[in-house]
Image 1 (cartoon, rainbow, N blue to C red):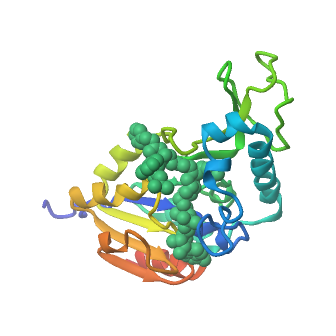
Image 2 (cartoon, rainbow, N blue to C red; image 1 turned 135 degrees about the vertical axis):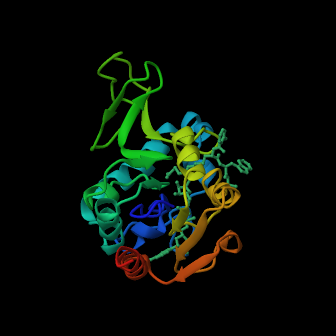
Length: 239
Ligand code: BV8
């Protein structure tokens, strides 16, 4: 390498899951007090459920949308925002979460592969818009003026996640892949670590427990995200 040239700074891809928002007070999906308990996922997070009982699904998301107003980003979200600002190489932040805590912590260009709780779209005309209040089957789309078409702009089971080309390209170009607070049970997100390994990227899992995919990671930091993520970021930035 010519003198004076620094080794290319690692290109980092970070994948977050519900565990990074747990200490902010948002329940995860599969922990003991998880969201899915008391609710069969088939009853609330798939197109068939929405067709069968739209008001039940709207209620599920109305409650979660309202909860966003009661929580704040935690130290893990803030540390990732700092990393994005301070890291000289590329940092791609991909989240399975539909909350806005990364953005409120100061992160930019957050890739929500499962959509966003504060966005809705019309199944009839495709119109997308920000929506912070309750949504009901009677809510009329402001563009096509039809009711019963507006739904949360969220990827349900059986639907294709958003931004998959961007995510695949970023992981294939990465030299470090970090999964934070995800159980590794939902695909294609859970398979991204294999894409990273296939291109020779280093892999790190930050979680407060073992997961279904812990064996795929080279490195692990076990503990709460609000403690382990800031420690990891500070160590990385300190070189
Ligand atoms: C797709 C939006 C095709 C809704 C979500 C068999 C039958 C049918 C389908 C499938 C099948 N096998 C595979 C599939 C595909 C299916 C799937 O994976 N099913 C699983 C359940 C088997 N996937 C799909 O349907 C996807 N679509 O495959 O389309 C395709 C794909 C690619 C290209 C072309 C075509 C769509 C999946 C998206 C579903 N929507 N969410 C909503 O949010 O309401 S998934 C849902 O799970 C959330 O998005 C959530 O983010 C995601 C993953 O959960 P986690 O984030 O990991 O949360 P979890 O509670 O599980 O874990 C929390 C973790 O945090 C734990 O590890 C815990 O230890 C840790 N933790 C807790 N506290 C802390 C902590 N860590 C650190 N600190 C703490 N304090």
